[in-house]
Length: 118
Image (cartoon, rainbow, N blue to C red; front, side, top):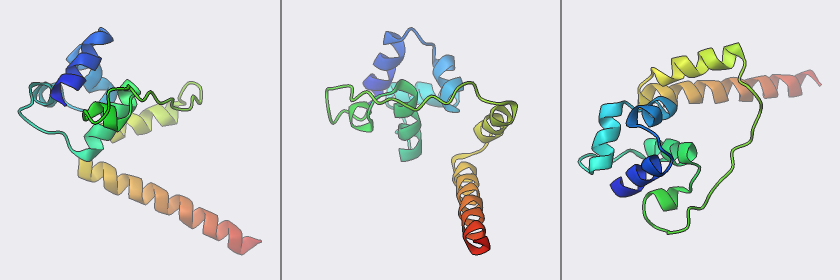
């Protein structure tokens, strides 16, 4: 897998810092992934696949086809979305998972409250 990350990065003429900034992974840790000295977590693999727009299977070497995916475009992020992303990128994986769970709970709670009003 280390070769796939580096190959994707170099094919796109990106620096390690470019990928680090786009995925909220430190440059030094990304370097370790590329060297094969550290294996990325499932969460990191998912972020890298999304960033490079390839399937997870391609990234981990289970298929040779890029398995390109397309992420929905929703226009330019608002100021609040950019602030939220900046905060999210400063969190550890555990904090990000907890944050996502809280957000999902808020949405589910709001949806349930709306159903009760009807």
